[in-house]
Image (cartoon, rainbow, N blue to C red; front, side):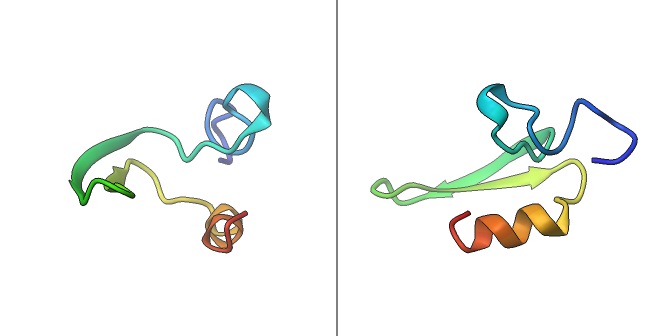
Length: 55
């Protein structure tokens, strides 16, 4: 994300995307589990679009 080189694209090992800090909210089901997270900052639109399609 702009202005913070520690967040955004490629901040995880192997160059994977990272949406930054998040807080666990809840989960549903077990297989497959569905987890809900509250992001501390908005996810970049490009990252959202890529991952919405299974990126």
